[in-house]
Image (cartoon, rainbow, N blue to C red):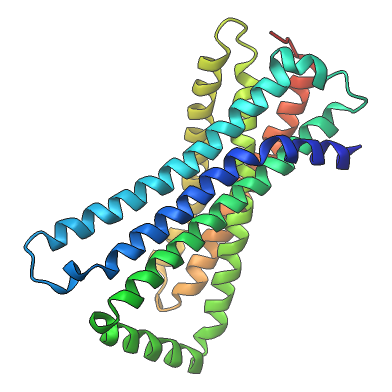
Length: 272
């Protein structure tokens, strides 16, 4: 049953996130293509301002894509669980765990896909800038290749690869934690019968504030130990520890909010 629920949830959810990610990728292509214009080879006084405006436009497209997907999934979760549409959802032959888990897995996957989309768009834009302005980046490209060559010869390569692994782990954990913050906020907000949306917004900011405080408290011993250490050259191990702690916080918060949301849906459900 869980597989069928996930398939239905995916089919009902994919259009808007796909559209937003597609718009982001197109925006990165267009922004990158503008660097092929002849004006970048000129001495026009407004060149720097144009470049800043271009990157700001691209940055805004990232914000619109990320926030748009999060808001859309939050609204979709709210409508499918706590409004008239929820009557149909809760008549399905599925437990509250199955209903919630299908939505959490699907939403987490789309959060992860949106992160991948942002990373791909950054590579598209960066590659376009480098391709069209290659002559201006010859020295930068040479220095980057030399850095990678030196890194490959060092013992720190193992630490660098470990850091990449913990970064990926943190991204995956944060997609789950971020999804559960949204789900938990909406589930808590529906308890305020007459002000559900305001309750959800307030719960979201409250949860994120608590998570930030917990993260700061938990990471403080790691940072203090690094600051007091005699040898501060092992940067990779410090960042590995920080990212691992962040991953654990996201997972712990996500699991806690999952069981809280499931309890509220199972015991405190009051559809509009």
